[in-house]
Image (tube, rainbow, N blue to C red; front, top):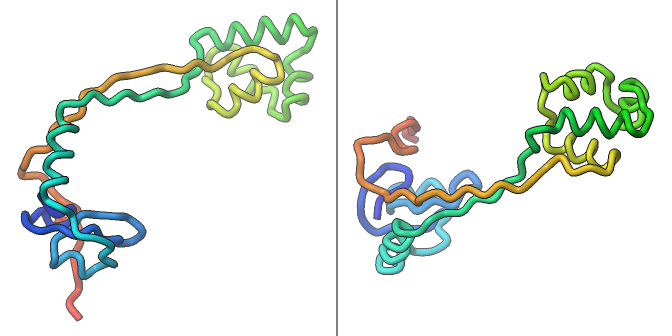
Length: 151
């Protein structure tokens, strides 16, 4: 196992450093509070299993035809852009940009508009990624970027 801070190999300790739990070597464990010892057998088994697994990520995205849906529903309710903007406590210019398709609303705003107009502007999107195997490289670790002052 490799130390998360300095990159050295050997016995690791689960240590809380700056509110982050890291697996660090004995030398780096001095910079935080040690909570447990990392068991080498369990860690290598978990690592080899995770290298073979697929990772599924589910996220919420805004539908592609959001501008047209919003405009049609607003018009069907007989509201002008200014009136609609006041009712949802937003600026009229923002509604103009969203309905013209020049600005995609944030998820929060899309949900707010969707709930007022009683339409669905978000959908769940699922992506599958292969977990990448960890290999020893000549890359930097956190410790490479930290300059430690001597006492």
